[in-house]
Image (tube, rainbow, N blue to C red; front, side, top):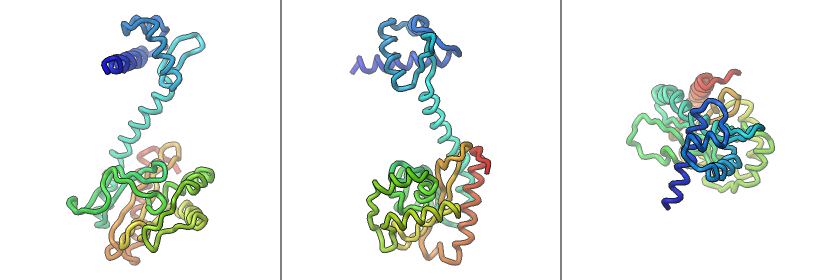
Length: 252
């Protein structure tokens, strides 16, 4: 156990020196700055290069690799997304008196990363960190609709299409047709497809690259989110998602 901790410490020592240097470092320079033997540094760098957390240049020097930058950027973007989205989720709750969610796609599931409610102590089936099947979630359908054709086909192949209610779409061909409509209209609805008596309207959030990184939704019972309210709820959710997308650098 102590040896494992010592190896981890040395890896972090190397990464910190590479990050602080500003320019690529040679094997000898890294060893000198970290106080680790050249043999150990070489062995650790080989692993780090294989994982792309460190890059070896043509002249034999080392620098931070793209994987490290990608990993940190993903984390920072995630924090930015939450920060930028909260005022708009709050606005949705205040204007519509519905529960608002933000979620991301993880495999065949949606993971809820934010939830806001008019009544915080209300016990609903969702919570931050909750996972639900993407194919019967408005957030999930929004994000699936933004995938490429090949990615959608892979999802359809691996999806179980379990029938949760009498409204659940279980035919893969019908579901793919629905995704085409969602992509064109820019919003999706879970119409009692996961839970009887519950509706949800969602719209996707895009980042500066034009990638759908998350989606937001407004949800409530069919007695609150009635047919008469659908148009106004769809409009507000789409406007909120578009505003967050602009804050994330998206340009239509």
